[in-house]
Length: 537
Image (cartoon, rainbow, N blue to C red; front, side, top):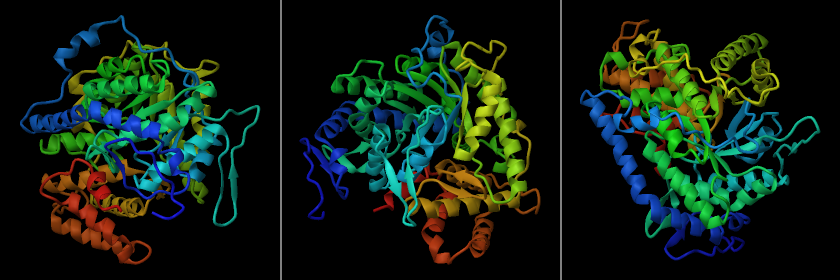
């Protein structure tokens, strides 16, 4: 710790061992660390129980049991009387949402994007380096207070742009999921949950600023698999609001339905968070990853074709999104569509084709009843907005469209075998390339990177390596070459991919080792980011 490093006022039992830079003490306050400690001591045993329950679901599926709607919570699904809280200020009209990491430059670009909402991502688009964890909170605080600015090493200046015609987006912060620890903060000798650290720091630094601006502290909650995990978040919010002296229901949360088990518990997840709920989102890439992870040992009926060929019109994906809209609107909640990851290229022909695909995707979502959707680049905000403007007109949303025509069964959600497409060497090679390139950047401290004109985050790496693992263990035959996927084939293609990548092979050594560690292992690693995090300083 340097002589200019700030001193922290630490509560009893709390240790912070990450490096401290000037300004960090404004985020790592006694109030924030007291809240981290209180949340940890109250909720950590239940967090561990929830994580153990996830493993039990995978075990039961492996033994032949299928996911299904829970008969023990049928009373929640059958009760027509309950609804979630009315939309909070700043979350009534969500027709276009921008996503991205919370580094200073990206924060300014997102705030200037013209989107209605910015998903400020401390999770999949963010590498959980200690500096990113704390400095992301500084950047969010400064963005809310209107004081943020940035000058690049090249001398380019960035600042917030406000006009009478364009309001700044409402910030909705995405903390880490329940599975990730924060190794730099311990309470009574135990690592704190990364998500609880993210939420506590944000609430203590920015909640009052948001309230002063007429909005509130809002969150996107990732990776949940069961309604008891939603109950855990709800209890965290209740405890935090009491600790900070702000009214119950001030916090609002949108839950990502991005795991296979959660698709069967949408009603229950909304119910558990109903006083703090801001709706559900269709997290498409992580959903595909979860399909593979949950059913990885169940044979060819659950083997997906090449990632690029799995579209939202596949029957099991269509069932998932239509059920999400119906569930949300039945309960008065927003339904938010999936991300368009396209990043504009220099080739205008490439751009034209991509814009057409994005428009078609957003038209499908708006037509199905979604109230808004995600984009990953500011240039795509107008395209998404135009589509939803055409559907919504002057209405802020279409929550009143209840989609009573939708009737989705468990069999519909499980119909993976009906997905068109093939497994090819080209698809295998693409998975290897994207995973290695992304992991190289991730290990270097960045969580979002454009690869082949698509903004990739951790979800892309997860589905890429899990497909390789599943194809290997199911001994899939490649449609274009006739070869069977083996460890030797994966290694050979990895060597060929590395030879074609720019730079030196040593630049990719750590990422390649990590990729192969999880892609060809005997046992499936639940999350790639868990072992990757342990390699970080």
